[in-house]
Image 1: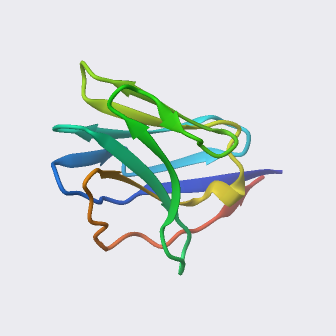
Image 2: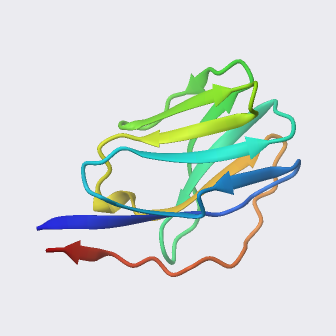
Length: 123
């Protein structure tokens, strides 16, 4: 019995930023990639928010591509030509089910309306 995880993307912005896809449903053990496109970049922050929780800081990625201490199983890549930051979750687990935010520096995290998180088991 595999467990499914659901990852949603929230939006936090000062400059223009968009995140896609809006939701990913995958199975445990799979690698998951979330994308954040931007108009200009000094640095970007990734946050994770569990249902009924507050956003938790994950790490910062600079315009140089350097990443400040991402948690285990999390990596990021910066593609300047396409103005995209990719967040990679390696070997995703059900506990990774959350809303993920990409926020640019300087930033103001704004609350929005997001779907309720649901976990399901796949038989």
